[in-house]
Image (cartoon, rainbow, N blue to C red; front, top):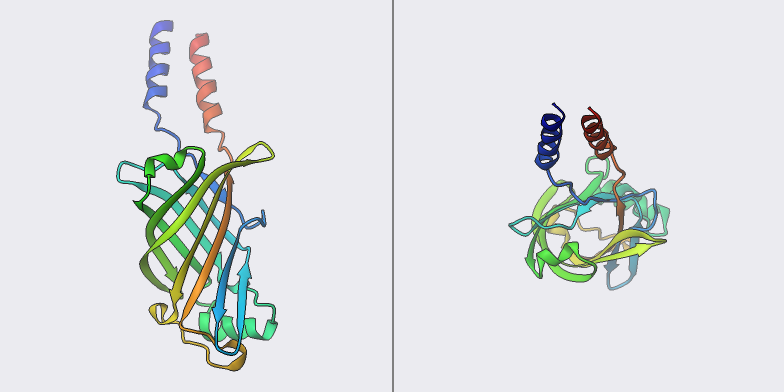
Length: 215
């Protein structure tokens, strides 16, 4: 009886799927931020937010796809002038209807996808779905993904820059002096992700195995 139970326990462990190595991006941590840089003939300014959330599992599958989702709270963008922020939210980004910008994906189309689960810095180009102002487009973004540690805990650091053309996302171009923008905006992304909290499932499996061995 003991040998049968031990065999069943071993089969159960083998049958468990490999756990994803998920890292979470938390807005509460305050260490991630997204900045848009706006240039116009009369003025240059930035909008910034650290209200960024999401998750990343850098281990690519057989097709070179990694699990990555990033969501930015658009209503929290701060340009340093409250009136300008309100005009931007209400008249152009329409954050009441489209509160988030998101990136989902992504496929590694340039670089070594297999190396992303290893330590160090990795430069790749990712292709994924970017949604802004309710419009979704597939874009390609050059990204640096670095595996490091902070106070002895593993971290993933992701940085990239890309451009957004306002008409592509049906965003009306601001023309008033306080918010006069070019059609193309540069986006700077700096994200830190920490290991996702354990759900305790591993402990349950381990306890089950120990019970079987004690029979």
